[in-house]
Image (cartoon, rainbow, N blue to C red; front, side, top):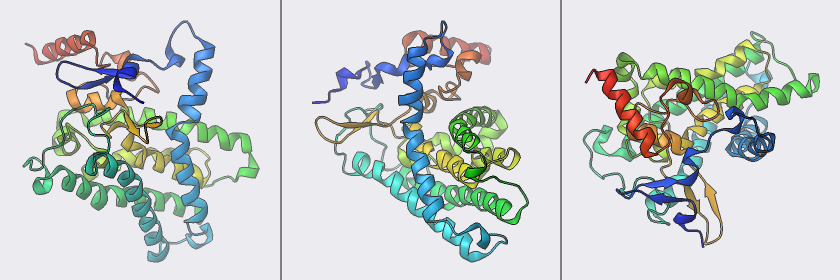
Amino acid sequence: MIEEENFGFRDKRGHFVPKEATDKNPVWVLPLNFKKILSWFIFSYIFSWNLVYLIFAFIAYYFFTPPLSEMKSFAPGWMSEILLRNYVIGTIFFSLIHIPLYISKSQGIKFKFNPNWPEKIQKLFTFNRQIFDNLFWSLFWGVPIWTGFEILSLWFYASGTIPFFRFNDSPIYFFLILLLIPVFRDAHFYLVHRFLHFKFMYKIAHSVHHRNINPGPWSSLSMHPIEHLLYFSGVIIHWIILSHPLHAIYHLFHAGLGSANGHIGFKQMLLNDKYAIDLSNYNHYLHHKYFEVNYGNLMIPFDQWFGTYHDGSEELHNQMQLRLKNIKGE
């Protein structure tokens, strides 16, 4: 039987705090422990959600993307095919998480960070419902903008505007870029996210996403279109460095599907009494809870370097409150 107490505890308010909330990426911990680094690289970097997003991208590119020869000029046919493909994959992916956890509620609040469910009527949201709001911003804006960056990337490669290389040209370089994409994503996400928390950007764009204090899977891409443009712009690196079309698609799938990781609201999804899927990024859940902490993820510890890290502990919570008081001049 999989029990919560083996993986964390409930605080005074009933919120679930996972044990590994305070774990740090061993790459940045001194003195270096190469055994821990190797274990992290294999099980938390390679055989992780990164691999899941890569598999989706591989299938999408090699089985559901028109040949590059057909994409030398913009045409409704191939462009709509890619848009439809992304709608189908995105909807299936997010629904496979949302339906069992938030509709059928198959495990109740077991492993749910916030013990409360999103309220049915909330005037803060578009259409007065969090799920309707999330679906609107994700599907009406998110997927089309994600697809727009993909269409531009493929057209650049197909038309010869930007050179690309094939796997046989340099297999080592091919895999090196694949391995670095999560790192590119992490650095880009921090820079963009920090910018979005500037007052004027928060007011005109990022506030849409932060309506989701108690997020669910569909909150992931629930953003203002300005934020979508910034969020997916990380793929531009593949317009600058020599890349393969799969690299660009993997980068976008990592951003599109990978956005779910910090918004699911559950630590684990139970498959049965013995097996569960590790789901969520508690680090980013705390960002939605407290707003001014954890602007980045744990791949590169920007927040630890710049004093905005929160791990759920009372010590760092007090540090956060003191920092915010100093900012406000209280």
